[in-house]
Length: 532
Image 1 (tube, rainbow, N blue to C red):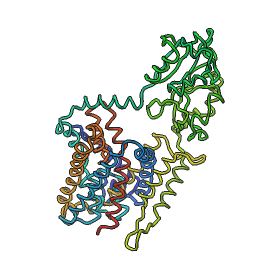
Image 2 (cartoon, rainbow, N blue to C red):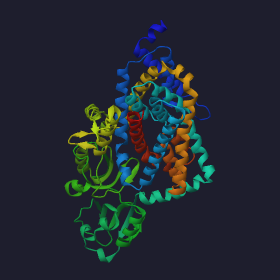
Image 3 (tube, rainbow, N blue to C red):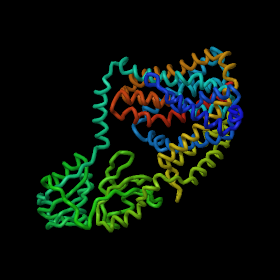
Image 4 (cartoon, rainbow, N blue to C red):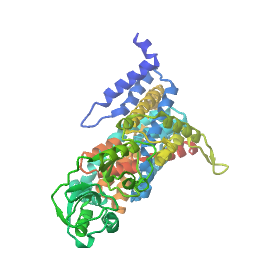
């Protein structure tokens, strides 16, 4: 009866996934395979003749690659604009040296191209890389080689990152404190403060005339005059003895104190008709527009005091572009705020809703783009392929963010669910397909492939340390995050995070991971299509 059940693809599929999760949760000295354990269970099932339909695997592949691209898009393009260019160069060195190491050893020990690209993907623990390797070679050898190289790809990165600070004799806590000080200077926290107007030079002048906003960066949220608290406008007159409530960082509040007078401990409670409320940006019509364009103070008599995005409080500059899911702190009359809430959307339910039209259309565009054949000469042509096409389209759409009424981003929970579902389907299908020839392949060249996989994992990390630490002088926290991201190793990031309370490794990882993923896909496609 059990054998009959295994012939049912849906039963076998979910059994493989369930057993994979059970295996993935087993920890040995803090290490675990996590979701990647599914491919090892699938290899075992495939060895005994269980097969998952290829169409299920392709369905999972397009879901997984598209959601990865949607998630990575903003970080991918933003990283080119920031000071992380050195990290990008280092990432190219990591991925490039991994590919070069594999190519050299291919000719030294005699490895076929499908196995080589599988080894590179496994040594860098890159499931998107595996997807591209399989799509480019149409060979199960890539899956088998991936499975052989993957275990050390996980363990090797973790051990290397754990040992690196000791080898370089660096104090992680001291480095974390120095980085935190620099981070705060870039995104200084915002605080409220109350001021008593005693500077005679501004008596009788309006807020527009004093230019407090442009001169200090602080936002005036309310003013108390003759015992009455009001929401200010540009025409509000400042008088001696008035009290002002403002929001800003330490520097801006210090400048405001110089311009206004004395900082006091008093709070300015709102009147019965006023309030401070947070509003969520969920309306498609305002996404992509700047605060200055919306001109909320003139239109709604409301003042935005801060904007919270991805856990960071941003100062509400006029040129700040609103994004889906931004949370705005707004001061104003209750009726005005209620009306403004309708403009912003302020619908928390929409944050968790999933619009499948952008997903379907994005995948369609990605598949079509992947079919393009770009000819550079008579002897060289390049096609993005299924995975490359979907990934590049998803990256571009995610960076664009919005096209007319279409929002190309999706909520974090929806992205995680679809990405996990796609990954599980893909791993189960390719694992069972590869499992048919697993034993014979390992008997013929398994130990050789395992040794080559170790070299492809270790050599790029050594090169990253040589160039990153000794040439580019990168901070140790940025370095371990860059190594984890460049090796596309989430377990490596977990190891780095366990060594410090600083967010620096995660920031570096997030900066370079999408770059590494794209570079790796391009290198694998290049090797698979051009190297014999």
